Amino acid sequence: MSDSTELTTFTGWAATSAGAPLQRYSYDPGPLGGEEVEVAVEYCGVCRRSSTFP
Image (cartoon, rainbow, N blue to C red; front, side):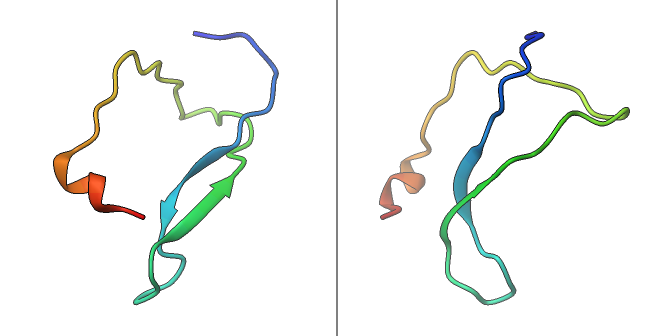
């Protein structure tokens, strides 16, 4: 894992309230807490159904 202190912003799609449409959403998760772990993702695929997002 990384010992880097660089800031990371996550961007994805989210409904920010019940019934709201999906919209692009970015956030800074902050430092890891005592009960959290960092996971390195080596491969990622796109589900066929996900390809219909705007």
